[in-house]
Image 1 (cartoon, helix red, strand yellow):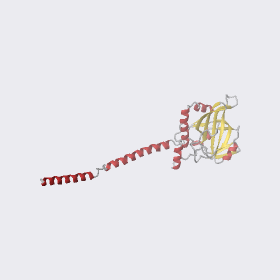
Image 2: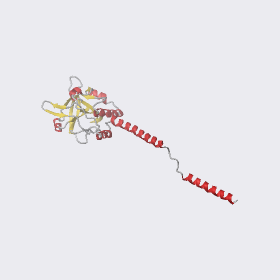
Image 3: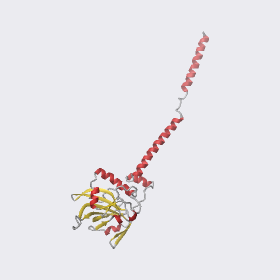
Image 4: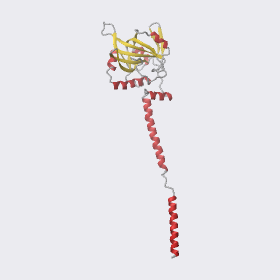
Length: 264
């Protein structure tokens, strides 16, 4: 009887020791390939996101934050100094044709197309959709030198209104198309050459003044079209037989600038 009790006690101790060892053994770990798959999945997601972000930044350079990022990375396109003979191909339109083309845009179309017009200019018209040069005579109304908050500087901007002949025999009369003609030049003193009332003659060749922004305003109770234009044919700008000044592509632009550059 005693030996049986002793055997039971010994078996109980042995069983307790076995259970103790089982409970003390660490839980099985996940296989190493689980972490390998996890790391690769995260890396793949990061690569895909980075790819789409990069595409968006380079495709929409006109967005101020994208432009600033590319500037910090030294990846901004350098504006090309075109001559009139090798400027990108585009239509040269007079005031009536400009009014017909742009004034009917809805607010949504205007916002979308303004982004496209600005993008074209910033990328040297790599894809010159909507590229339009202005033609015609424009009477100067205002002039000012550009500052640090403007689209670019140094330079100056002229506000002028189109003059159009109603018929072959009538004198030219004001037409509801206004322009803001931006001159990129270090010779800002040349702004004094332009006086209110002067007539600015603009031709597709040699000026190549390209539309970069479209706006519709009400001036003196009249709905008018306002176009911001920048000449992309650079060099000497001649004013009659007396005055001239040099223009060159701006080194740095500010896509976040509010247009128009003059208040109403």
